[in-house]
Image 1 (cartoon, rainbow, N blue to C red):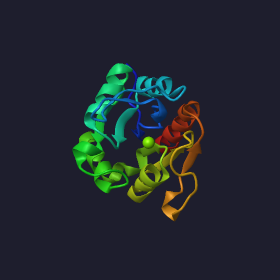
Image 2 (spheres, rainbow, N blue to C red):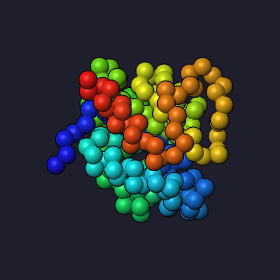
Image 3 (tube, rainbow, N blue to C red):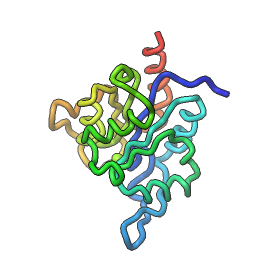
Length: 178
Ligand SMILES: [Mg+2]
């Protein structure tokens, strides 16, 4: 049994773990399956196995995320599923983050050990920055924004591939554990 890590990971899904270009939808628009971004599945599993608490904080339909992570077999890696359809608002709304704190029993005092990973500057990075949690921009997807249009879109850290994530996470874990 691995020791639980101090750092808490919030992560987006679309274009952060799975490649949105590969999403297969049914006639209702529900996603049935999708491919991982190269390396992202291995990284998600690795971080889970290393003892990190991981919350999915994602915009979309509950059923879509259930389908995708059932089919790819990595649903067990998430300790909480915070989905906009259920919460009623999308990122960067504070309620998406607050739902994750509540689900994981986190308070204001825990914000220095929470990191949000996402591809979308306007949703994931601005949302995290406004919460005062650490933001990591995965600049892999060609979709959405690639320039910082507002001051609070500025990520604390930027990576280009999921493979860069474990070292960054280990560094952040060490930083807060001192
Ligand atoms: Mg996304």
